[in-house]
Image (cartoon, rainbow, N blue to C red; front, side, top):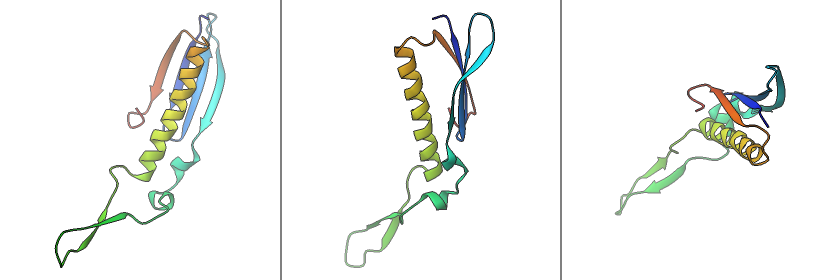
Length: 106
């Protein structure tokens, strides 16, 4: 198929359009990530992990994650869109793709 897919995405929403030889755009799919609008504190369901030093008077410390819960959900959303594109490419639904995304989402 001689179609070009145009993917427009950020952490909250992803839309895929198809452009055929005639130049008209048709929307293929629309993905919404409602978690992106949530606050980090609302996404965290448990306390941070704790660790303790060695010795008799070892104090406990919290172990904060490397990424925020919001960033983690954005990565999952990006992986979901990537999987959709991968499966569509394997079924030869498009010949080329154009990605338009926010820098933080890339």
